Length: 234
Image (cartoon, rainbow, N blue to C red):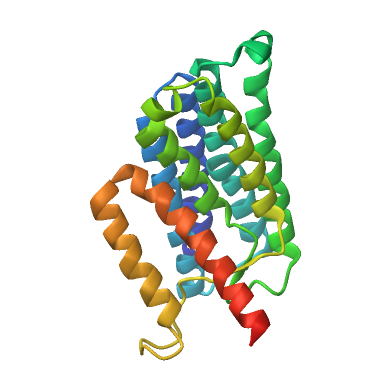
């Protein structure tokens, strides 16, 4: 029985992603965000459960990636798809209103590529290379939920959103090293960046609430870039 428990939790992640996608396509981004967060919780506990019960398996690893593609790839892409349908369009690209929203699903494809790379990349045991798919999903979901009014306030927000989408697709498969919040010991020395990030993130979330999630993810990418430049100079 216990050998099936981690995979059952992974399937809960997959189901959460399906529900999130449904809410996204019906124009309910708040509920879509809620189910993406639920999927992230299941995603956290499936691996932990497998390690605790010592029942890790190749099929569990593959199932985990398939679930993540749905929850952290398709679901946020569906949210962006609906958002692009309701935004104002500059005059020259107004004729593309019915076709352009489908470009959102490029993010789902890059999320799948990122997960495939992660499964084969032995360098990502203690840190990440490229933006993790849960972080990318939470960025877009929280941005749409918390900043939807802003995104729809001007027709010139559309090019900005499309540019941000391309940047996030690039970050998913980039070679940019990104730190992970994994602690081998709880002391300050060696964990300075993690504690600074955790403290500033908590402050941002308290101030900005849901939009703060998107700000925290952007801060995570920026801090990872700063750390990479610093390490290359040392």
